[in-house]
Image (cartoon, rainbow, N blue to C red; front, top):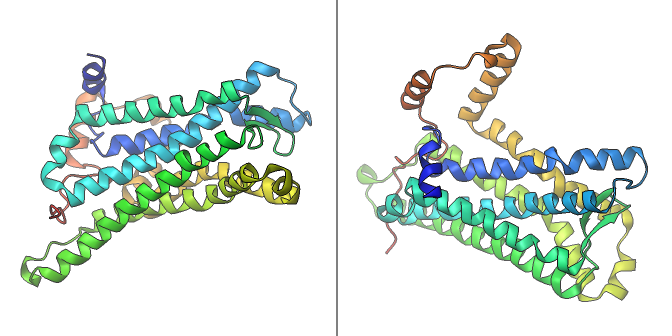
Length: 305
């Protein structure tokens, strides 16, 4: 009943594929609401003076953003894989209700993945980065599990999905005669490249910090003293800077996002944002200009054998 109610209230412009992108945006914004302001306070005071509970909440939301991001990126890759490689089953697999259930499942798994931190005691203040964050040295076994299930395994799944997509597209283009050959529309190409770049940036930004954690977990006494502080700090801030990069990627690579960004800026400048269109006008605009980000008219859709 709850899923049905939420599905009915979703904006008409949010397609089954787009909902994963919206969910990823929410994950990126979580850190800006609470943890980052507390980090600034910690920097100004040269230490943490906000108490234990604020530290735990800040660390929890940090983890919620990080794990939520990688799980949503994985969900997007699986969605694109099903859309292109199993197109005949896509509409059934990714109906509005099912897509919403998948997103809710992603966030449920994200919360479940973070809860063990409270039992292990791994959410601690780190003076090197002025943040309450995951302490890699708190538990070697738990750190190894985090790196594998929250980074390496999702990276392998996403890599498999994108490789299968590229292999299928190449196979189809070689086997089918030119006059019957499916073609990627420009929108489809931009959308696929956009989400692929988002994945690559996440892997590059979070790779160093995760491999530091894995190395420390395997041999804490020997490896931890060998890691320079500047390298850890650089890896940490590079990882969390990834939350700021997705919006930039969307703006650079996706024309539809650039158009919407311009509308938002113009709305702020002209104060039109405070006088929104009526719901009927909004619906008509959605119908006349559907978002190309995750449309269902991709012409490369071919079921794999």
